[in-house]
Length: 325
Image 1 (spheres, one colour):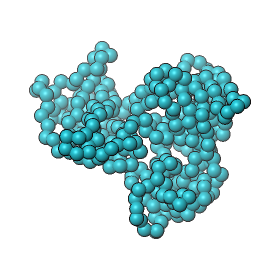
Image 2 (image 1 turned 120 degrees about the vertical axis):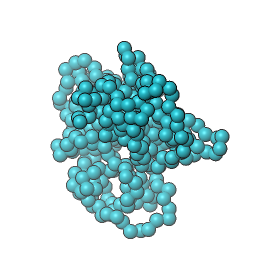
Image 3 (image 1 turned 90 degrees about the horizontal axis):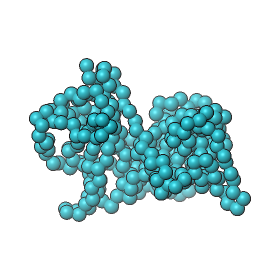
Image 4 (image 1 turned 90 degrees about the vertical axis):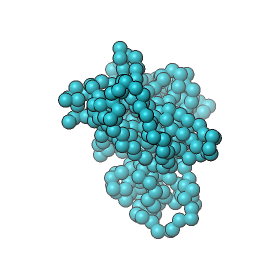
């Protein structure tokens, strides 16, 4: 049964600098781009916004996976001094370490932390290095890595990216342009660009994704990284399914037509890690028909009994006609 997951990049183009998922995009700039370097400051103004900062970013390679310095310092103390793996500087500070055991900065080794992080001693502090999500794109022809910070025009906040590219002159404008789907001829001179969000836009550091989707269920991946929760992040079994009818979101009808009844245990979300929940909706909804869906899940920032905050998050997916057969 062939399943295809639709990853949604939700950008409010003129009102906000936020998007929901950490999605990698390959491509160059769409249409002509005007870059103006300020004479007084280092700010670079482009067609889609202002580049505020660009610098090399520390990265190392473990078993073919890239990890970048998130800027977060680990609170995991005390710890043993034994390294779980060794590293050596093998490329320049703005270049990608494409071979396992290599780094682009002076470092002896690392320690395992979570499924998406490792920790390394940098300038006397244990820094958290986060796994770079390449989304199965080949990296062999990529060469450079940068931290790029900028502000889209009329946006409410800055955007920060970890950018991999084959073009050392890549700018904030080059990263933003494929996201906006501007009509125009693509400028292939900008080269290939792959990026991750440097930090989640969400205040609790939460992002959701769907894995192994079938008409009767999926694996919900709850990634938590950074953010500023004030208590423990927790979730329960309840969720809601919605689909589009004439481009309007509506609740999916249950098999009985009545709301589902839930048990209410609470599960803790791991910090700086991925928590997985196996969801099977066949008992309540049956097998979903072909269509475009979203699953809504409420997460709690729990401090004490009666003292908590709640937020509802969404993840999008599709069921294709061949999936429902």
